[in-house]
Length: 141
Image (cartoon, rainbow, N blue to C red; front, side):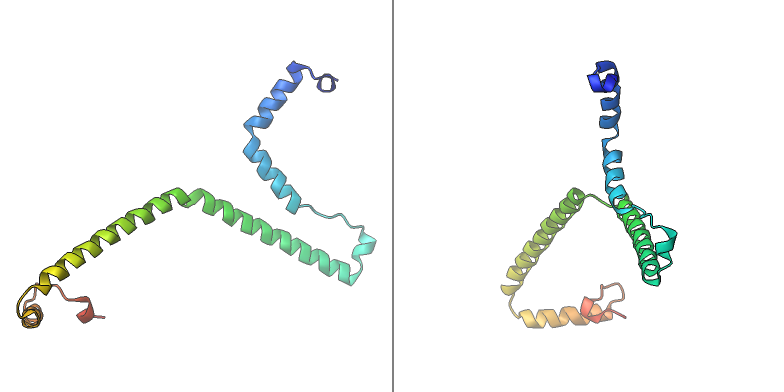
């Protein structure tokens, strides 16, 4: 009666509960739409085709439950898209810095006399010295 008449003492606690549990209620309403069990009388379930369809329906509900649980797990445990975008932007900045360094070094090397001879000597020196880093093209498998 108080609800129908719009009494504040009745409506306010209901609204407080609804608004406080809004996310849970949305999730519950979403799941309810897909997890409805259809009641079929036993005499109709005796039909082989209907029974097969019911089994398929139950399997699909179970698949939906598993998929939804996995989706929720990924949402809760995974990084947010904002974090991933920030990481990608940082990596792109680092990539650009490395490219600029490579360009600077290439410009420096272009001006060196007998550049090919110097490169060959450096390669030989690396192959002789045990502490010298191995270039990626010569790395061990």
